Length: 388
Ligand code: EPS
Image (cartoon, rainbow, N blue to C red):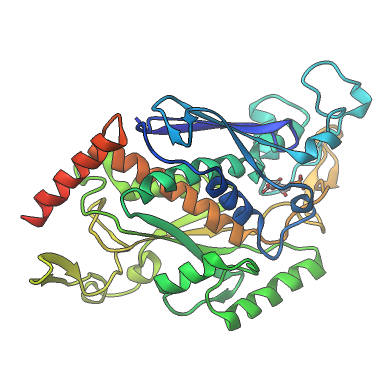
């Protein structure tokens, strides 16, 4: 079974990820992992922390001579900021006077519920793990999942659909999204320059007023076979798995597959994608893709389109009302440093989560201990599908 775990605190030594269930023989390029990590750090609206970090992964297990060997893969990504926290967050002992306790929980963050649940009067221990810094490890794992999927011609990318109230009012094409992924000057990750400029104005406004701003990203996957996931049980439906993966991302409050919100306001005749058959290619296809590539919890061979909705992040330079955990008196929420807008980064993280879910679904269907075996199973299925 393909699965992964992460560990690590935002200001601790490093982030760690382990990943099991990939067949042996998948070529893995470290620079492709590091490129994804670089992409996650880009975007207008990031705070001071991104100037400190240059995220780079070390693979310490499971990959030898440039390919997976079937055993668990382990990754480490050092936190450059750790050098500033060695005295404040030691593993053992340490001077209590050097701690940086957080006693004024931020509305919208994990601080308060986590402090109560774990019985830790210092919310520092909660925010260290709840922080979106953890997504660095997810992106590194996702980069490996992407390299596995690429063996079968499956690609996963993203773009930003909305920042605050500014929204791209049309569908972004795959070619535009590919072009965006090659840009080195990612501003807000929107395929349309004019809309992106409007998005920037919203982020500028949030900077000026000490506020934060959310938005919507869309992940698109191409090259998927028909039939990943299944209609047969609630927990084998691929849409459910994708939803869990996306909503598990920090600050994401909602997910949409295809035209969910718009579809709910329309009539069925305008929402369902009519079915056609291409006799020369012996292939069924849909006239539209409002379903976002999923019907009945299964891929239908069209592009997969999944959207994540981010609330504005909860650390505000102009803090909101809170209560001091020690005195129980009203107090402004804690503020140290923060991002203002993370929607472009969230798109990259969304890609990683979608790639991970797709790799798991792919391996569930085709199995294999070696890439050769997986490929044989996959090609056998494709031959069967072409004869349907
Ligand atoms: C975060 C707070 C900020 C963000 C962080 C998420 O970190 P810091 O407190 O060190 O400035 O920069 O995100 C990252 C470090 C990252 O790599 O994405 C939070 O509290 O969630």
